[in-house]
Length: 425
Image (cartoon, rainbow, N blue to C red):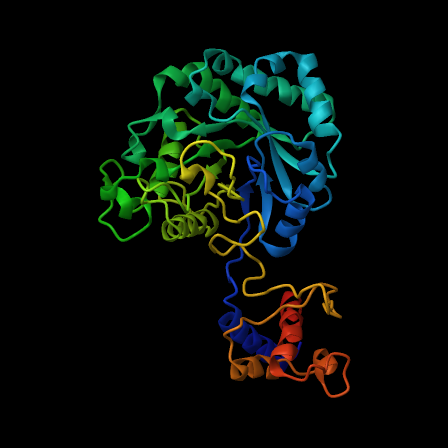
């Protein structure tokens, strides 16, 4: 590649960043895909949308919905499935566990990239003694069923609420509550270590909201909370929660475990008595939370770490019971329009042409990309000028895409072409 070509591509990308407000963040993120709604698109449509329009590369579902598992086949999007809370006691039996694996994993795997089985959801928080006592035996039983089936790369774990912690205001002092430590948590952590499976946690600063704590919770400037033991001042609750989890498992000798954020998010709308539920706050929280888990900077006690994370949630779900907030956790509406943008769209500022008169790109075979409506012709001409050469033949006089002969139409072709060049730099 010549210096001139490199310079022209670099210039093109600078123009595109301004014109299209494209995200420059090279990260991927997961999402919780709930289905308590009567207006959601089909699983295959969801899979196609996530694959082609977002940087989301993994989903977590709250059951083993076969339509979703089929819909995500051959997409390369990884899937975490969930065992229902009430199914836990029965699956301690080896035969029952094998049947469950056959019915819910084997018939879809590996075409669908099932990555992990989450056994229940926040079981310790339920207080159900039968579920709690059978939790670890069920997890071990399902793992053994996977091994018998010859499936070695599907992990098994269970999500925990941070209600399992005590003394967590100063993260270094956090410990697992004694009622859970030896009976449930110690054997669970040992199993996770032996099977190289992650610890799943659901940190939700939202549920600790108070007006006096708003800045600390929403990543706004604030004096922070000082940890006397480490001399670290925490300026946001999410990072403090993550370090509290780390401190708790380190105290039990398991600081080597991977920690996955199985759920975290913020509702964009609530009832009149829920003023914290706004689009602005949802953007503030989710955007900063995503930055923490993907930047590679880590946390004060876990430096230089990234955290596999599943934002809650993919869609607004209109049948969820409770307050309006419960129905408005989604990043997207059921028609795929974003409720707000936190940088997870791979085609920000682009739209798909209507089916009538739509033309596929001659290079990519995909639909055309449009510049933003408010982009000036002068700016578009600049991006067009910086990518001359063989790629521009279709829009030159007599070329297959010369008409309509205007800057905006020509730029809509060049944008994906420039991005393709960038991929191969």
